Length: 189
Image 1 (tube, rainbow, N blue to C red):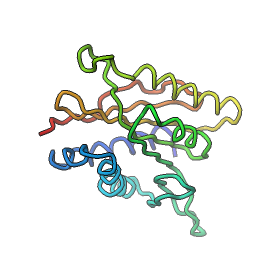
Image 2: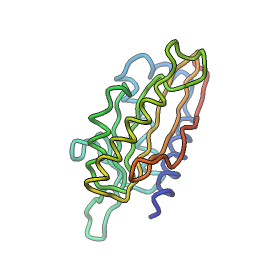
Image 3: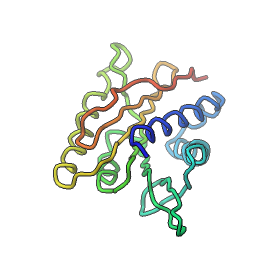
């Protein structure tokens, strides 16, 4: 399976499932971190896994979510590892965990003040800081133990009564394969 194709299918299905939700569900999810986690776990990720033809596992190897393909002998082989952390500035442990795992696609889902549009955030967004931080982590791990894997990050941001999801994709050595872009946006309330 081509790495880029796996990411494209994952991201496309993720967006499709976001688009199917009513605004009220986003408003509820944004009340607490626990609500956001429930939204991903029960409403978004299980359907995404089914749509891309994999088997859904929760807390496999202490990873939040794992999408597997069943081998001929019945063994579930991980193809996508997903970690979710509600605070992007605190996601170092989750990113390092993903870097240590062997699978063609690793995904971090997080929340951050991401936008670098002047006026969106008082002190500017964290896009540049976090992009560099994640790139350096991936690069450091790859320099010692190279893996042919992609790492995608989905970033949720609630700003100016809008909820946006961005995506960014890193190559095996931490290089940016696909720049940060808005993949979903909805007006809250």
